[in-house]
Image (cartoon, rainbow, N blue to C red; front, top):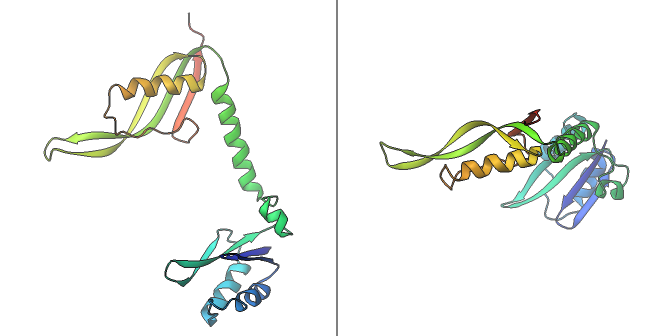
Length: 179
């Protein structure tokens, strides 16, 4: 596992924590304390993949990212993506493909959105999570989404927030051909 480190324009891809600490010691702004050294060594040894951000001074940080990329070019071109992320990406792409697939008929669309409602006791408005399900005639999942959104925009407060058709808060299913 390699480490990518960046502080403003200074960046490097190193193979272990010692090389990372050597790089950081060359930057005058960064003070290497025993706690910081121990934390970087611990991060390099763990199985954790999320990026780490270390504070240099107020609103100034350097980052450390674990990667399987062998070279800086591979890292920049994102060639060393983890397999779990790749599987999730393929799953999302198939959902988007079905969204645009044309098949005339009845569709059932359901989604969760933030609806603006008036609170009678205070006279103020608030957002409420609302689950909505509707059946409509459409030619695709995308058309189903657009028809439901158009219907709701005429009936709810204009400040309500609707989810993206490509997001996890919208689901649809094809019910069959219309007569």
